[in-house]
Image (cartoon, rainbow, N blue to C red):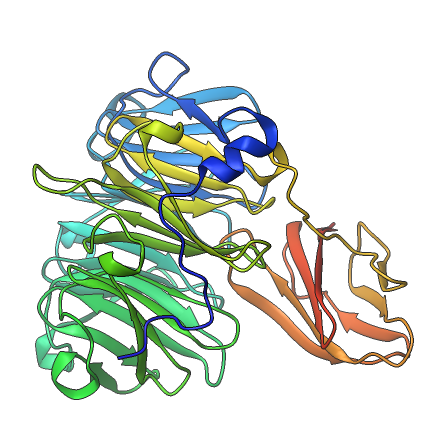
Length: 413
C-alpha cells in the first residue's frame, strides 16, 4: 500500500523549527497556571476563540489569560470529564461516565439515560451544522435534536455499540462518519449506516480511535495500527506507519490545521514513546515529530484542537501544550495576496471577494472547529458571498487558486 507519497519523510527533525527562533515552539500549561488537574482528556475551541479543557477535576476555560473552573459544586454531573465539544449554538457539552453536562453560558444542565440518552458512559460529542448534537457512548449512539434523543445501536445498523469518534463531511455529499471500537468506520447518510472496515476496504485496523475530514472529502482515520487516508469515495489509499516517521502506530488523535498540515497525536506506554507529529505541506515539507525533548509537556497525548490562528492545543496526561506558528519564522500567508482581497471585515450578511488578474479559485470559510461553513467558486470579477447564515464569531477564509493558497481571519457581526 502507498504511504502518503508526495511527502518528504524526515526523521525526528523538529530541531529545524526550534533553530528558527532558538527557543521551543511550545507554551505549556499545568495546574501551576490554572488548570484544575494536569490529566487533560479533551480540548475544544469556541466561537470566541476561548479554549475549553476536559480534566479529571472539572471543566476549565482559558479566555485570553483568565482561567475559570467548573466542578460538581457548579452543577457538573461529574468532575471526571472525558470529552468536551461546542455545538453550533455556542453551548459547551462535557461528556462523563454518568451522562453529559451542557453549559449555556450561565448554568449547567445534566442529561443521562433518564432523559433518553442511550448510555451514560460518553466517549465523544459532535455538533453538526444543522444544530443537532451527536453523542457516542459505549452502548450506542444518540442524536439530540429539538430537546429529544434518538438512539442508534447495532440493531439500527451500527457494526459496534462502542462509538469512539464523530466527524462530518460536506464533500462530495453531506454525511456523518462514526468511528467504533472493533467495528471499523461507519458512514451515515441520514438513513443508512454503511461500514468501512479492514475486511472490505483495507483499513489497517477496525479499532478506530480518531477521525478528521478535510474540505475535499479526504478522511484521516486513526487506529491502533497506523493512520489511514481515505479518498472521497472512502477507499483506503494510504497508511502512515512507524517506518514513515511516526513515533508509534497507536494513533490517539488527528486534526487538520488549515493550509499548514495535519497534526497526529500518539499515545505512549511502557514499550513505545509517544508524542505528536505534524505532516507539513510547507517548506520544507515532511513529517516533523515532537516529544518533551522539544518542549512538549508530556508523551501521553490525549487530544488535539486547532484554534482560530491554526495553533495546535495538545491535551496530555501532564498538562496542555500550545504550538504556535506565530512563534516561528515560517511563512503564514494572509489575504490580501497579489491583489486578492475581501471586504468588509467585520462583515454581516455579505462578503465581497476580488481576485487578481485572470485567476479563478475556490473560497472556503471554516469555523473554529475546522468545519466547512461555505464554499464558492470565484473568478477575477468581484464576487459576492452571502454570509447571513453564519453565526457571529471569528472564521477562517481560505482562497485556493492554481498558483497558491492564502488565508485570513474574518469576523462576522
